[in-house]
Image 1 (cartoon, rainbow, N blue to C red):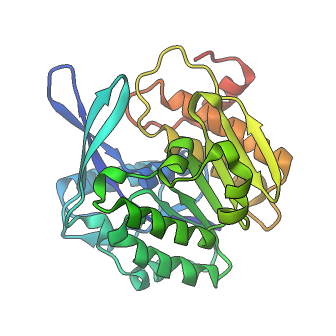
Image 2 (tube, rainbow, N blue to C red; image 1 turned 30 degrees about the vertical axis):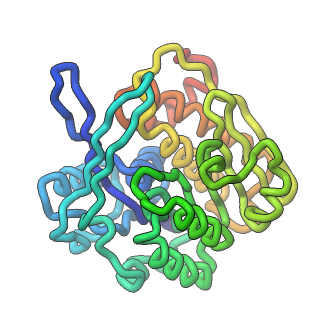
Length: 311
């Protein structure tokens, strides 16, 4: 049984102390796939990878992490870039997304890569911008007909769109196609959804799905069928940066559920959700102690959760 991931693979250009830029493999769905593989979940990355030098680096990373990838799924278009700057310790991204490899696909080409044993299909982030989202919606509709669990990580990027109204509208229209949706408090605010009055929001937009909501230092919650499970965040004394923290959180969440119950129907019990949220918070806490997105191994997560490793 396999988890398939569609989404951007980006070279994050991270500033160094010498004033230069160090390219790091990144992109929200790509990081999510890396975290799954690091934690032992079988994952296949289905977006095209550029045939340029940065694409070669990404291919090497997938091979090193054990991520399945069709070597013929390459694009002559360049790898997308993200110029990273820091504002009070928080990363800010200038994204270069015109004519790039990870959007060089058709729904039919992606469907051809989805094996019959696929249990979950994940996408989100820059696959939700207006230029791409219609293709994604068509794909998700066909995958739902195959009884595949659909996962979305909203991870909104308003800086890369010109019409915020269209961006919000198309995402809200897409939500009913998803079974599991991860969003941050910032994502919800950008969509105009008031988490201070969450119940009406859940009933209107998330009635048929599991919502995993992250709130930074306030921890995370899961909402499903009128139920709520919440856990606190882990305290971190030495933060390097927060690049990939949300991707690592969600990767650890899904990996734990996969390991426990293989994502079969009826898996969203309160006990399992609490365990998954706790592991996800621990994984994200470890990630922010490192530069760039570096998802932890399972034994590292266990050490934090048991108190053997104080961050």
